[in-house]
Each structure stands twice: as structure tokens, then as C-alpha cells.
Amino acid sequence: MEQRLSSWRRAALPPELDARAALILREIVEQYLETGEPVGSRTLSRRLPLGLSPATIRNVMADLADLGLLYAPHTSAGRLPTERGLRLFVDGLLQFGELSEEEREHIASALEPQGRSVEETLAEAGSLLSGLSAAAALVAAPKTEGPIRHIEFVNLGSGRALVVLVNAEGQVENRIIDTPPGLPVSAFEQATNYLNARLSGQSITELKRQVSEEITAHRSELDQLAAQVVEAGLATWTGEGRGGSLIIRGQARLLADVTQLERLSTIQTLFERLEAQETLLKLLELVEESDGVRIFIGAESGLFDASGLSMIVAPARNAMDRIVGAIGVIGPSRLNYGRIIPVVDYTAQVLGRMLG
Image (cartoon, rainbow, N blue to C red; front, side):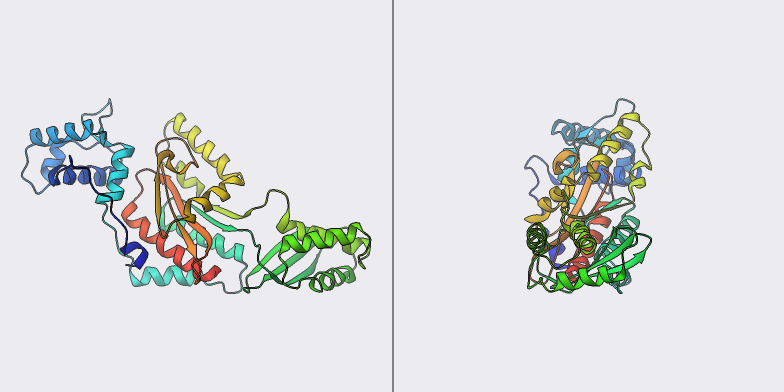
């Protein structure tokens, strides 16, 4: 197991939860995660290697309910874990699975840049994680604020151009912009030469400020059409409200087992929040002080305020231990935590190496 995961700090179990009660709670949660159904005392009596009668198990389940760890749905005599019970299970009772060498190689090879842009690789990471976890995946990368090495404009015809940006670390990002109709090829060359002559270790924000001042003061040697290309190209990275890349894959998986209108409304609200730019900032804040995987159950993350959903997220750190992104999944509370946590952890490590 990778170091960050093997050093997972288990929370201390409450003193009133003895070994027998902890075993019963873990079995109930594991059954719930597998089936989504309430678990009864007779089922537990047959599954647990304790030789306990259903009556004894019912007494323990009643005690767990008094502690706020279980509850009884009104339609069933069985018990389900509360969010507090799930939190206790995740923090103190969860058993992690192991990723096989083949799975590690699959993740690593799928995220090889292979000439792709950063956003294309982030999108691939999201699709990969969504498929491996059977949940919706989030991949976030902060906006590029470091020095820029090179900018180039490539004419695509039909009023469009490709803007290629290479930062000081060699990462390549592409954007497509609209251009004035009938723009000559020389305007793209002029825009490229003009910007590259002014880079000198500046960030996009600094470069935009300098160019804006020059154009406003009529000190630019650009003609009017080339100036429009420059402004449009820089705006793709520094436009109002842009804070980086947030890619979401597998949203439909959140709707797979939704049967109640109330749950459907909750998912819809989540979709709306995920589309808002502040979600990117919040996601990066959640991992900023984390060494590894973090798990949020219910409203704990602040991204959604309803029960029934969980999020598993990890920071992507480069070789200098700087956070260069975040990756995680959102799904129903009965996610397969033991399986998904190692997948998120390892994918975040690969992504960090790739971005860094």
C-alpha cells in the first residue's frame, strides 16, 4: 500500500463501543454498503462468528441506536447506519483493499500525457476514476499563474484559432478562440511574435496587464486585427470568473438508483453547484491541508447540504509537495469505501507526478 494510505490514522473508538458492538456495527455497515437494505438480527446471527442469539444482537443494536450510530426505517425491523455510524466506520473500522500491480499499471498508462493537453489528461483521469469507482468523478487544477515560456496562435480557418500556451514547467494547454472574419495569416504571426517578445518570465495575469496598458496607450506595434487576436487569446486564461479547470465525469451515475423525488431534487441541486466556479475553489480548499485522502459524508464538505451523498477526495502533489490539483468522487453514501479510497489515492499520486 502507498505510504500516504498505509499511514492512515484511525480514529479512536468511543469507550462505550466494546469489541462485540464494534464487530456488529461493522457487519451492519458492510452489509448496507453491499445491498443498501436494512440488516436484521437473524441475518447477523447467521453471519457473525460469535455464536450470539438474535435476541442478544438486538440488544446490542438497540445500544448502537442509542449512541446515534444506527436507526430503524419505519418499514423494516432491520437497522441502517446513520451518517454518524458511517463516519465511525470509515474512521475506525474500515478495512482497505489493495490495488493489484495490473491496476496500478492501468491507471499510470491511462494518464500518460502522450502529447495531450493538460485538460485532455484531466478529462481522461475523470473518466478513468468514474469507471473504476462507479461514481461521479471530479478533477480540479488551479489556474496557471506561473511564468509562461511560449504562446502561439494557429489559424484554424472559419473564424477560429487555436491558442497554445506552454508554461515554465513544460505543461501545454490549448484553447480555441473566435477571430474576426477574413483575418490574414500575418495577424496570427504578428500576435505570436508580439507576446513572446514580452514574456520574460511573466505570468498570464502580468502579461495581460502589460499588453492592456500598451494597447490602451497606443504604444503597441500591433495593428487593430492582431490586437484583437492577442486580447481574445489572453482572455481565455484570465477571463472574469475563471479559476482553473474543473472537470466532471459520470454525473449520470448519481441518478442510477434515485427513486424519490426528494433525492432527485438533491442531485439536481448538486449538479448546479458543481457547474458553479466556486466549487473548484472549495474543492482545492478541502485538500489544501491534507496529506492524503479525505472522506466527507453528508454535508461535511460544504459542497452539498443533504444526506445520502459522500465525497472521497485527495490532493495531487508534485515532487516539491506543492498541490497542483485535486481528484475525487461523489456518490451515494454506500460507496465501496475500502475499494475506492486506494483508487483515488493512487490516481491522485499519478496525476500529481504528471502535472508536476
